[in-house]
Image (cartoon, rainbow, N blue to C red; front, side, top):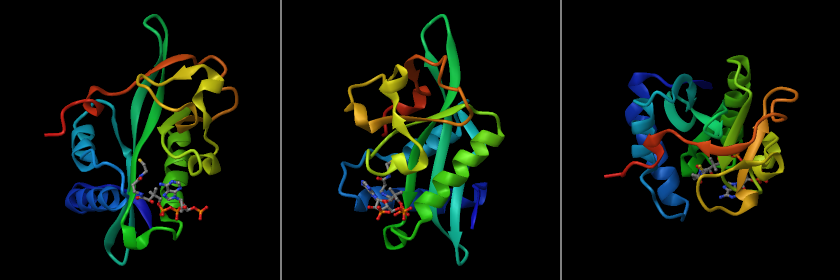
Length: 176
Ligand SMILES: CC(C)(COP(=O)(O)OP(=O)(O)OC[C@H]1O[C@@H](n2cnc3c(N)ncnc32)[C@H](O)[C@@H]1OP(=O)(O)O)[C@@H](O)C(=O)NCCC(=O)NCCS
């Protein structure tokens, strides 16, 4: 079952994020702490923090937070998908996909026009993500172009979107 995260889930979500990233072999950037910071941010959209529950246990989580794309004079609102986590023993069963698909659908219903992700170029295109540089959308850090992606949530949404992505400051705060 995919549903909105509730306060009572916070501990379990922390564990899911920590275990998913620790087991992934990637350098661990304290993503569980990032989730905690983002919950207190103005960029937080409670309806877009989703958990996957199985047998009464939280086994997956995804978070979408508000970002801006543009320059100083014009900026449009968008969302960042980050992080997404599934407990290692529940991976490769479609749970991550269900979380992402449900999140994109909800974001569309809430009126958001696009979503940006920094991630694996072999995973996110299945949800419609394309390299953001095709639309003139740039990351605020150095990244291989194929890993910085964007998906439109409504027709023509990317036509007038250009510039650099500005994440919530909580993304770059210290993890300590
Ligand atoms: C990425 C993640 C959320 C996917 O969850 P999941 O429930 O296993 O996903 P699904 O079952 O829907 O999809 C599995 C697919 O994802 C692919 N996948 C998983 N990790 C991947 C990675 N690091 N790079 C590329 N593809 C990956 C699998 O190969 C599989 O591909 P297939 O469908 O072609 O066989 C999960 O692997 C995870 O928690 N990883 C650690 C945290 C992380 O790296 N998060 C993403 C960055 S924010």
